Length: 257
Image (cartoon, rainbow, N blue to C red):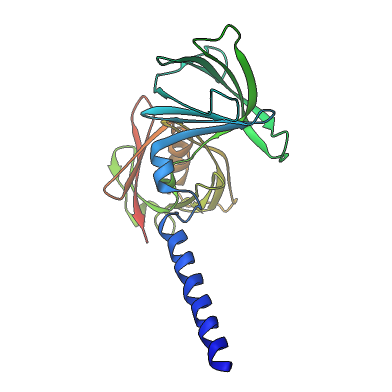
């Protein structure tokens, strides 16, 4: 009897380890699926009736419990952007269905979970065989690029390579938490913290706060923080994170383990 119990316990441990390993292989340190992050950049859901939408670089997928609209795929199209507000409108169609998706940057509370998301989403959808348009509302968020979730050390600032002598003790660095859209680090003289604003192809560093230690003359922390807060776009290649805006390349970081 004891031998049987021991064998059963061993089997349970092996099964648990396999399950955990499987989860780790499909997720990043930020807890999101790398495959989904690469395929889709925005997700939204709504209730009564339940519906969901995922917007990706190649396609837009709409799912719902509404009969005849359970799963509909549209080719990706660039949104129409409002001039005076952060509002985007997607006009979608395929051989069976037409839809309009409106995304507005406005705090939105999920009617079931109570979770507050940063975007309000409205969907108007109709099969071509129908006379009436189905109107739906819900909440959504952009999926922050999981590749940002790391520690980055400064290499270049405003087009010039930087050295330890440009700063107080060591090179500036930032650690980005893409799951919480926050960052922390060292500016070259003071500790820094803040938040990141992320949308498709848009990255901004906001609400930057630093400690108030006086910096010696010649320290480039102020120049670094100004460049960080001027960022609007980014690229990641060969373990380097490049921050820029329409005027110039601002900062180059190197990924560190």
